[in-house]
Amino acid sequence: MKIGIIGGGSIGLLFSYHLSGQHEVSIYTRTQEQADEINENGLHLVKGGIEQGPARVNAAPIQDWSGNEEFIVVAVKQYQLPSLISNLKDKARGSILFLQNGYGHIKWLSELATNKIYVGSVEHGAVRLNGFTVQHNGVGVTRTAVFKGDPDTLRELSNKAPSGFPFILEPDYKEMLIKKLVVNAVINPLTAILKVKNGELVQNPFYFKIFEQLFEECACILELTDKEQYFNNLMGVCEKTANNHSSMYKDIEIGRQTEVDAILGYLLELARSKNKKAPLIHNYYHCIKGKEHEREGA
Image (cartoon, rainbow, N blue to C red; front, side, top):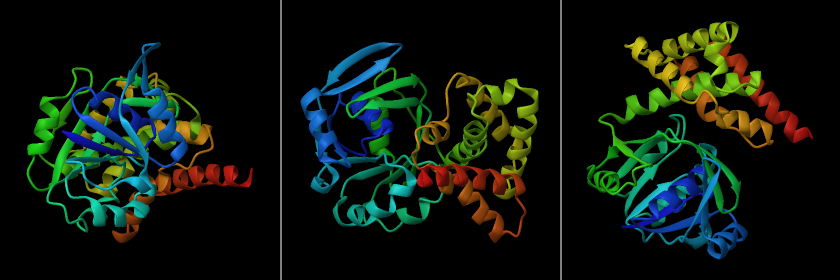
């Protein structure tokens, strides 16, 4: 299958590397410089301290994307999506898989003309080391679900997936994304502000109190009917990724824009629309925005 991957960050590089074994992969980057690096060096993967590669893919800057691939993976951050949507509307003809955190991007998907639109939730840990190298920190799964159309392309992708990079087809995209939203809303801001690894949130009894309260606010705003299921999933992710730093922690650490608007910002909008109070979400949202402001003033 011809696959186009939009985004040269950690997730874009990770997907390009793993899918290139069974498919013809093209990756589209923000800069010509990164595309040149990938074409010259191939893609490299670091796993367990061992560098693997190179995997050969075609790389080009995003402005050269023509939309001819059968399957498109959109692996940019949610705040980068608005500038891409018009391009996707005009050019995308194949199936599209969106891999953004949060839930706010769903409102844009119905604007696309293509018949098969999917959404995904990535549970791998990955860090981009340079323009052509990604470190695979935590092996997980990619959960996918149908937003529009049939699941045939997802099934094909799942059947041909390498053993260390599985895809799981979920029956309900809303439930799948809300589960990931809860995980991101609790773990990401707490670890970023407290400057701890994920596991500290459940291992430290004082941090765990805030962890529980933040979950309760999320559950109230989202009106979760089976809170225990969502809390158990949150705990499971925290324990499974205990030695990892969250993506928001890393964004703050290196002075990069975070996805707080897509995560806590979305929940605050939802709380306002339902006339509900969310003091912890409000406070942690502004703590993260304050950290971003510090970077802008530096």
